[in-house]
Every structure is written in C-alpha cells, then in structure tokens.
Length: 333
Image (tube, helix red, strand yellow):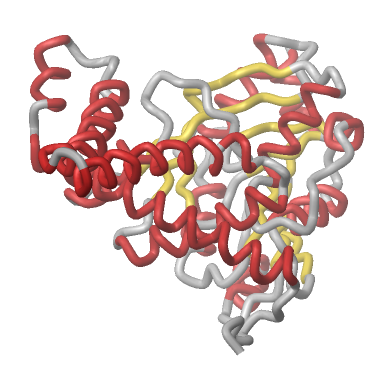
C-alpha cells in the first residue's frame, strides 16, 4: 500500500474556519461532497457568525455523505478557528480549505498524491487560482495574487498532519491575518518536511470593488504589524513613497518636470508587475500584455490603493494597538 493509499485508508478530515459565510458555505460543502477522493469528515469551526452560517451547516449535516462537525466559538479569529477544528477532528491528517473558495473535484486526491510522492512529508501545500472574470478582478489578480508558476503556501489548500501542527506550536490565535505565514515559518523552524502539490487547486474569488479591497488590505496591514512583520511590507513601501515625495518636492522647488516622476514610477511599477506576472507566456504575448496601457494603469491604481490601505491600517495599529485608543473613539478628542 503506497503513502496516498495509507492516508486515504486512515481517512482525512477537512477543516474549515468560517465567519458569516451563509452565501458560500453550502457551495463549499457540495464541492467537498463531489471530490474524487471524498473526505471522512468535515469540521467547520464558526467564529461567531451573525448570519445563518451555523444553521446551514447543521442542515447540511443531516444529509451529508460524510460526517459534518460544527464547532461553535465566539469572536474566533482564523487561527483560533483552525486550531479548534484540527483539535476536534478525529483523523490524523487534516486538509485545510477556506470558506468562500471552490476546491476543484480532484483537489483532495491531488493532495493525497503529493503525500505519496514524498512519504516523509508532514505538510503538503496545494495551489490556488484567482477567479478573474471582470476587468477589475483581472487587474487585481495581477496586482496582488502570486504569479502563475510560483509555489504559494496557503491554508486555503494544504494537507497537514496533526503531529506537524503540534510540533510547530499551532496557529497564533490573536491575529486576523498573517497567522498562516507565521505558522509556515514555525513548521520550517521545527524541521517539518514539506511537499508540494500545485495541481491541488482551489479557486479563490477576489474582492470585486476597490472599497472592499481597501478594507481587506487595511486589516492585513494592521495585523502584519501585530505579527512583527512590518519590515517585510511596511518598511519597503514607506521607503518607496519617501522617494516619491522627495521627487515631488524637488519638482515644486527646483525643476517642474520632476513632478511627472512620481506618477511615472507608479505606472512603471504596474508595468513591471504585469511583466513578471505573465512570465509563462510567449515573449510576444507577454509584451502585448505589458503594453496594454489601460490594464497596466488599472494594476498601478490598485497597487496604489493597496499602499494607501497599508498606511491606513498601520495608522489604525498605532492608534488602537500601540496608543490604546478604544475602537470607535475619536482620537482627536
């Protein structure tokens, strides 16, 4: 019996953290029921939904082709929900997926094949693809989704053994984001062997508007500082904008054409992102993508909005987490 058959025989639990997912949770459970390698159980850890998420999970459990377990917590952040789901699972192997994503029919089977290819691995990272079906989401995918061909590590698509989860010290529970990145580093530091199965794909729907994108990255930025990772994001962006401000100041004082430099650099950064993101295309098609000015401008604009969101989220961290101003209190008073 090979490694994949051993894991399949022992059974796999799929663990799902959820919060206010009434619009997507049934679709996810249906996708898990349609897997070519069906899970033994699905554990949904709900972090205090105010909509019908919990009710829908209970209703689905009554007709599901596998065991469905609902773990109910209050004010549970993603790390806490994942920990609660893995702790409650009755299987040693847990496949992690996020509510709101769409695992392809062979997703779990491909993760099992990744375990077969490397019998010593205790974590298998799958892949994900953005659902980009509008001009905005196509530009958003280029702006912030890892380029095709990279090996992203994500809790939206991975297979994790309980021993690895315990050895790495579990997920940090006080963060709304970045807890997954910290956990992956903890796995590396603990010497947990990893394998990759990029063909184990879940589809991820991007936020369809600038407003929702702004709110998402504001939260990411605030939690990035909480996680102690500001040097890996905030510092570099701050240096870039200090350079833009210096160019603008020089334009106002010394040489007016220098005022064109900041927008030109922002546009050039968008073009560089487009060029890098389409590295897998033939040279001609890649060049055409990079010379598509409306698309490049859209990517550059989304990057700029994300940068503003980063500064705003960092300010929120300073006011509420560092200074200690309670949420909802005007800091100007």
